[in-house]
Image 1 (cartoon, chains in turn yellow, orange):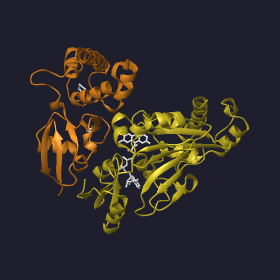
Image 2 (cartoon, chains in turn green, cyan):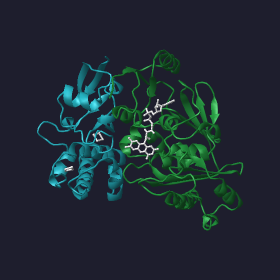
Image 3 (cartoon, chains in turn orange, blue):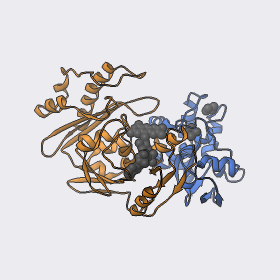
Image 4 (cartoon, chains in turn green, purple):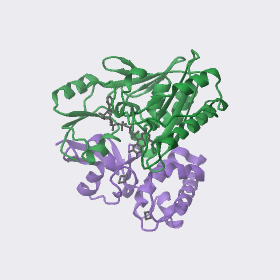
Length: 266
Length: 161
Ligand SMILES: Cc1cc2nc3c(=O)[nH]c(=O)nc-3n(C[C@H](O)[C@H](O)[C@H](O)COP(=O)(O)OP(=O)(O)OC[C@H]3O[C@@H](n4cnc5c(N)ncnc54)[C@H](O)[C@@H]3O)c2cc1C
Ligand code: FES
Ligand code: FES
């Protein structure tokens, strides 16, 4: 790891001011993406600004209409939240299946969404549920937020403060984990919103990161059942082909995971 | 350079280290607590697991400065004098180790699992929750046996108290 300067601000304003003054700063939350990247010297921030302990930046609020997860809330705290389990059980299940217990104690939803790894789990839930990403400046709709591999609508120095998920009528998530890393080889999140709209998103599959699956959405809107998808062919165009599996394999996984996600959603 | 203040195995520690110092480096190189191991250094193997404010974390993936203000327990902090902690005793009695390299991390993770699940621990849960700890020797069978045995011992000693 290259040299760096560590800061621990006490407020979002202080964090933003530190960011503005530094030459190549990065925010640090759970550190379970940033620190490994710094150790490999793939990232070399001059300043790391630790936002994990800022008062008010972690915690969960649940109302009848929405689940609000503050940015620095760990995967562990989401997975074990009874309030989230009642409102959106698929979200608890997703958080509880990220990495391993040690990763879940440290990793945060804000870090995961800011990083936008093409195989990360949370982006699928955020996109499928049509969540809103709240920052220190504005609210960003999920459809406008994800901009491809490791790229988002966040501006330089902008801090995610929370993710607001509308409570759906039904939702389910299924992932086929890479057995070594636990990241999604392909994961599919299905949601039927209270408005009746159906939204489906896949992670781990596309070369351009998390994506919606309009064909599956249309089919499920007509008939919400596993059987609806039995005869559907999923195109392998634009899907990831790598040492873990060719594009056609991932295309097939999309169908299988979508059916499992529907089964989980009930 | 930040001054890191933390409690390690119940003892207050105050130390000025480089900002980029990892928690595992602070423990091993600065405090001489070499029971915590570094296996992969890439957040995968769990040999470096310690408890940070009571939670099992990979100390190769935490900056020492991030831990400032917290309390850390390492494998050296478990035994009471010559008396092994029940999880350590269970690993010894069940042959839960061969070369022993993964063992400190396994034991720290095992204790975390037992605390979290209490009496509801079964084999499938132990295997699932040990996902972040890799062992190259044992084939895991006796590790899982050790954790289940330790959970039973800890329930008994809690009941006796
Ligand atoms: C062994 C291992 C297994 C894993 N398995 C999985 C898995 O199965 N599925 C999965 O989805 N993920 C997995 N992860 C990734 C893990 O979930 C990360 O913790 C997470 O993606 C990043 O969160 P963090 O809090 O650690 O972020 P950090 O590493 O602290 O930060 C990541 C990036 O986000 C930025 N950032 C952080 N918080 C904010 C914020 N509030 N506003 C703006 N920018 C911010 C940082 O500047 C940095 O660029 C795994 C990680 C490890 C080490
Ligand atoms: S050395 Fe920390 S996880 Fe392997
Ligand atoms: S006993 Fe040798 S690595 Fe586990």
